[in-house]
Length: 310
Image (tube, rainbow, N blue to C red; front, side, top):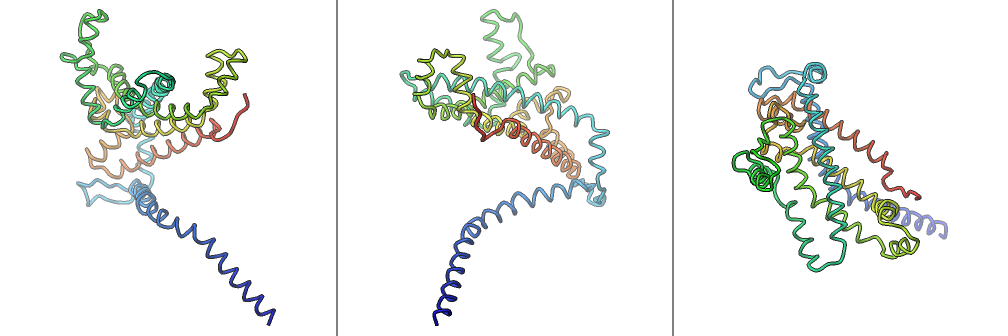
């Protein structure tokens, strides 16, 4: 009897153990199904379409063509390489300026002064503006004949005639980056402000007693303490900037002469303009792979999540 009771107790404990072990997986199951349905399947479907000749207005010509779209992209499509170069400039310069200016603004807002709460709230306002609206606002600011910026520069004597910001490739890209930087600074400012607020004041007081100056304190204490926040914010913002279509579409629409044609905008022109779903899917698959590789290398190279001794 004792042996049978022991076996029954073991079975009950075993069942209870497996039930408890299964609970986390059952709780995760709805999320996994949701991700599989709304993210993984569309990605698989895009890859399948990238292997087809699929133009919506020519349904009879739809056929499996293997890697033909990819071969054409890498061997014949000059606009693809131009879009990559434009995207690299667009992302790198925008994120670099947003990071530097956002950190500087967060550093100032972390100080104690009268009305600090109001200024912190105002800093967030550009982030709440939609990308299309940002494009419209900066089109009005940078307009050649009616732009506020040209008028201001003339009044302070910097220029003697209006600048046509959208007539050349370099100026158009500069204008787009200016608008994107203005919109993205609040994200970095708020993120860095939160990270700076978590750094104990005792560390700065100890460094000051030891004779550490502002430069040493910044690069030996502040930046290392918030390194993970810097890595995460720059990575997220780089991905968002790379995928952004609304702002640059409403501001320059890729012109002049495709000087501001980024990869996502090129993909949308193929997808919505030419209705070439197969070719657009191939471009989208390549862009996704590039961003995944860049993100992986960046995280590994930055040693995110690992403490460093200084």
